[in-house]
Image (tube, rainbow, N blue to C red; front, side, top):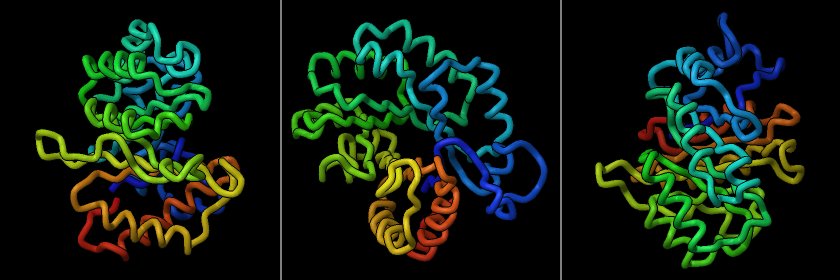
Length: 254
């Protein structure tokens, strides 16, 4: 089970939870097994930058990296071959620390089978690893869209707050891979009632921990706290680690 935050900020109030020397990422990676890189959405990073980040982390650590907005929001998944190849070449610097590709779509982008199939088939030609898609238009939650995502082994993100009930639970590909690896269950919790800011209370986190325990035996859950604006994400992630360990002690929670 992978629990972490979007970016690796370490609030001053929680400094004692991240002892030792080193840069933020090095200290963060001693407590959490993953981080979501959002800066890649706004600007490209050099191969060497990704390689430097990978070198700061232990062997078990994994990165999730968000696709550039040039692909998802500007090109809207069309004609993105060159942009996609450039991006994949950059993140190759992460080596075996590369975990999940995150495809976050604009709320205005509806499901169009031809466009979506063409893009994800193109992506699958170059990337065989886990992919999580966070659609935000209602049409992406129809059964036909879910079946198409499953065919391409694309997991649909479970988001909070959810724009519609289906968005609160994982969808798309939920079956095991041919090599026996469990399905990716990617959760992005943005904070509620104030998105990106509000902290989750312990009762809410306890309910999520119990639900995650039910999924975990045949799956690979990721939970990314994106309520980073006021520094709530780090404390929530630490609390969820403890709650998941208590809810399912037989499951490895790092």
